[in-house]
Length: 330
Ligand SMILES: Nc1ncnc2c1ncn2[C@@H]1O[C@H](COP(=O)(O)OP(=O)(O)OP(=O)(O)O)[C@@H](O)[C@H]1O
Image (cartoon, rainbow, N blue to C red; front, top):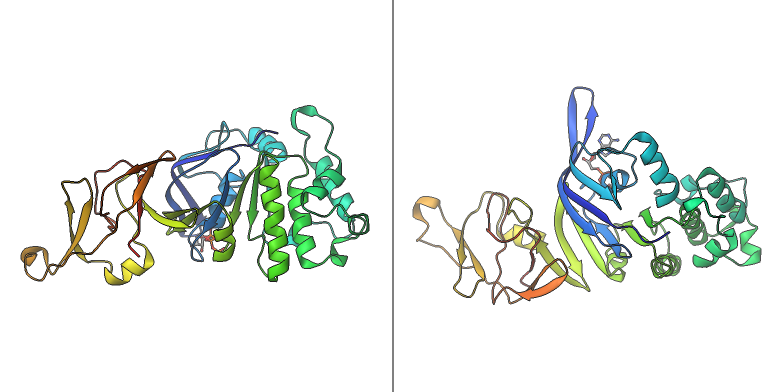
C-alpha cells in the first residue's frame, strides 16, 4: 500500500474517569507527509501514546480533527476504523511480547497477523519471509524460532514485522527501542529506516533522544500539544494556531510562568522578548533577551524571518502565521 500521511487540527483527547476527566491532548496541530519518518518525543504523561492511540483508530478525538490518509477519525464509522486498522495502519504496542503469540514461530506470527488482518486491495498477502527480511529477520534459523528464543532486539523487530504483516501505509510504534542495548537499538532503527525506504510512513514514540536524533524529524509533545520540532538536528519552537508558543525548557527556566513580557516586533520582521519587572513599571529593569538569526519554515519551504526571534509563553500572541517555526537561541 502507498504511504499514508496524517493531519491533526486542534486535536483534543480526553480520558473520562469516574468523577473527573483527564485531558491528554489539548489541541494538537500536526501534519506528517506520506513517507515521512517522525519521532514523537516528550516528557512522561505529555500525551505521546494517546496521540498514537488516536492515529491507530483506538481512541476517538473528543474535539478537533484528525485524519489518517482520507479517513476522518472523528467521523468514521466503527467499520471504517476497523478496516483502517486491518489494512492501512500497523501498530507495534510498547513491549514486543504484547504483539506476539508465544507459541508460534516468527514466520507463523506474521502469517497469523495476515489472517487476522486483511490484505490491501484484496491482493495476495506478501510472503512472511519478505516482511521478515525487511526487518532483518529472514534468516532461516531465526524465522523458525518462537519469540521466547529470540534476542530482545530480534523480538522487537518481529513485533514490527507483525505490525507490517498487511503492508500498511502507516506504521505506529510505541517505544520500539526501550530496554534494548545499543547494538539491538541500532538494528531496530535500521529496520525502521528500511521500512520507511520501502514506502511506509513511520511514526515512533520514544523517550530516547538518541533515537530522535536518528530520525529525520522529531515532534516534541508537551502538555498535550506540539511543543517543538527538530529538523535535521536543529530545534524549533512552533507557533500554535492560537498564536502561542511553548517555551523550550531552558528558556522557561529564565522566564518562569507568570513572567510579564513585552514582545517587540522589529523593523526587520524579527521580534524581541523583553521581560518586565511589572506591567506598571516595565521601563525600569527591563532587559532584552538575546535571540538569534534563524530561518523559519512554512509548509516545508524555508524562508528567513530576520535576525532575531520571539520566544514566548502561553497567552502571548505573535500575530505570525500558525505553524511558523522559530529557532531557539543557543
Ligand atoms: N487509560 C488512561 N486513563 C486515564 N488517564 C490516562 C490514561 N492513559 C493516559 N492517561 C493520562 O493522559 C495523559 C497523557 O498520557 P500518555 O500516556 O498519552 O502520555 P505519554 O507521553 O505517552 O507518557 P509516557 O511517556 O509515560 O508513556 C497523562 O496525564 C496520563 O496520566
